[in-house]
Image (tube, rainbow, N blue to C red; front, top):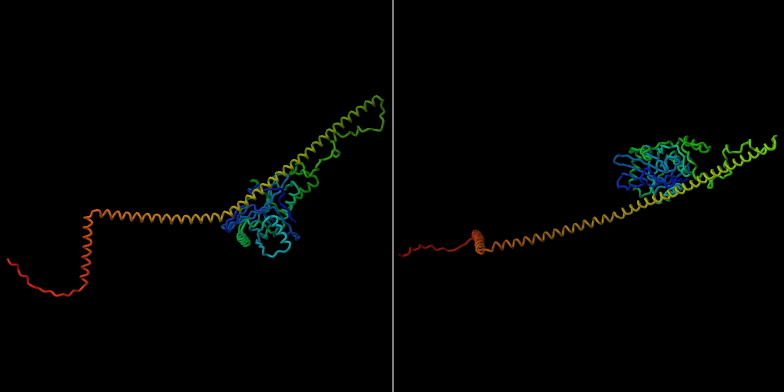
Length: 445
């Protein structure tokens, strides 16, 4: 049995309807992700809930987590489209397992998983929860309340049954919302009881009015309201006229409207078959008075009945107009919901397609930067070398412009170098020869 929790195209008034994009680490923070729940009651019958929103937070640095399921319904009084919540805290989880596609499933489970994929329109992750204590069921403070239509009543009944019976259930949500590695890390932490609960600030729900924690096993107040509705006892929570669907399209007929007692024909005025013992003139006057009063009463009665019929027809027309307006509002909300979903999908696609382009652009910019750097360095080195050569040539030319100084310098440097080389050569060589010593004669004077 599948029950849709969308009793209208409602959105949570306490959320912004956005879905978080996950970083590639063990932290998890997703919000308002479409979900589908499957569970089996105490009699072994399978049940499911669709049109849910899943919010999951897991902070690995603090080892804190919280799972939140959310659905919307419609009331006659109080918040027009309130959300009802189911908070699953880590200390309420006995075991949490990730169900992969390779796991063996029986035929019923396979059918339910196929149904979940069809409902969500995408491949899904599956988490199997086993709870050791019931989840926290939070509703508006107006509880107990009455519902706008039978669909909302069915949502409430299925939701309370799920909160009461779902000690073991399977949660489906789209794969694109979260990676498998993050889910496995969260399942391992939850099953090892290493997590503590994040603060579920119930007082901030419903626009700051706060919520009310309800025991799904305690239906006394709810049963009392339903009993009052069936036997016709008015309730403080339902003083409004009946919904448009509860009345006939044409309104009550004239023959079924009872006139007020004050305008009903007086029993004393009923025609009597007994003759009064009066004279003929008095009898004629009484009869004329009676006929005039009866005609006046009939005219007044017809006028009041006509007014009642006009009021009933106006109520029917008003109800039809309200129903049309509500249908248009729901259609607009559905269009906005689809538009937000399309925008989110488009943003994901753009982000996915732009990532490799950004990487390629970064690589090209880095390569271009390297080439420009090498080119600038080569140009600078070439210019510096040319400038050094030019300056050296100019310095040498300028130094040797004076020929005398240049020649003296050359003679001095070269002569000194020749002397040093000759001295070294002579010191390293052996020479033989004959010498003749003669006495020099003094010159003649």
